[in-house]
Amino acid sequence: MVPFIHPRFELFGVTLDWWLILVVLGVAAATELGRARAIREGLSVKLTVDGILFVVGMGFLFGHFVYQIFYNWENLSAQPKLILPWYGGYASTGGFLGAGIGIWLFYVVWKKAPLWAYMDNMAIALCLGWVFGRLGCFAAHDHKGNLTDFPLAITFPDNWTATVNGQAGTWLGTRHDLGLYEALLALALLIMLLVLDRKTQWSHGMLAGLLLVCYAPVRFSMEFMRATDLANSDPRHLGLTPAQYGTFITLSLGTWMLLSRRGKGRMDLSGELARDYNDGKVPPPAAPAQTSPPAAGEAPGQQLEAEPPAPEENANNPEDKAAGSDDP
Image (tube, rainbow, N blue to C red; front, side, top):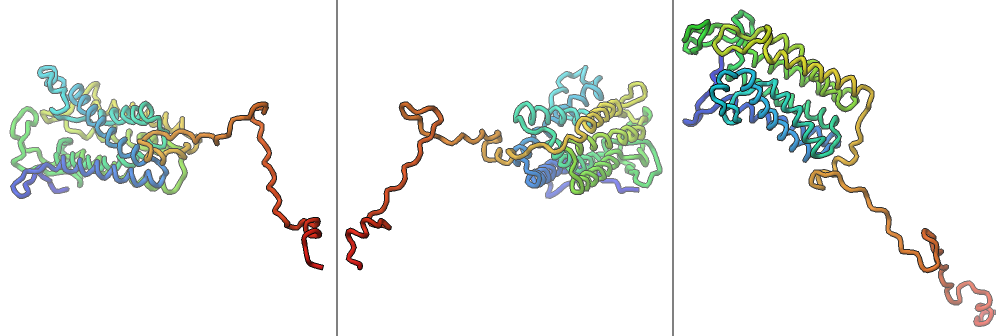
């Protein structure tokens, strides 16, 4: 069994939260990986870093909205103020939705950048941040699964209180921890993307599409291990969780990306590095060479012939040489 990790710990008298620490580390790691790959691929570092931060913010914002609307509707209907972002609560399905909207808004609408090239970079970078984020979920134990004797399960301590089958304070026992499982899944997907990125020259957008296609069916299957006997168990609609319905959209989008980008090749990135020195904007094309205006009577575009250089005096001139030379 995997050892139980308490969600909080004290350091020099200050209580720290593992989830928050790991999420911050994940954002920092994703930003650094995206920056390093952008340099290698000829992408704008400015657009890469700013884009990652914008997309992460959109992911948290929509993740909160989806959680409150689809997972916490009863409490939200009683307290509408819970929809405000600072009340917390996040759903990864909403995070994917927000990230997709954020990528489109930032790179297509705002920056007019080659979307698919930046999307591949974003997919690889955020996959690393995803590993850290899910490790934070594992430390918080907010994705508890069913009772099991699986070797990677977590045995909760006796003093961990919860409401199980309507009884408060019941010992949780040994359960799946889906935060840990998805962290391992994200790590496997990250390794796959890094290997493929180095070994092949994929059409831009294919790596991002492949990430979605590989993730969706695994996440759909993992949801069947989610706890059903806890008071805060995820709601089911026709036997499926909201996340499982979200995987249908994820799979469809990834499949469309793979089919639409197949054989399209690499996008033109020749002007992207210049964005770092032009406030993130595409530099204007170089102005044509300036020509002097035509003189009176000269046709437009007619070029004047250059006058021949004046001959040097007494230089290789036989007449001058004969008249003025004392040589015999």
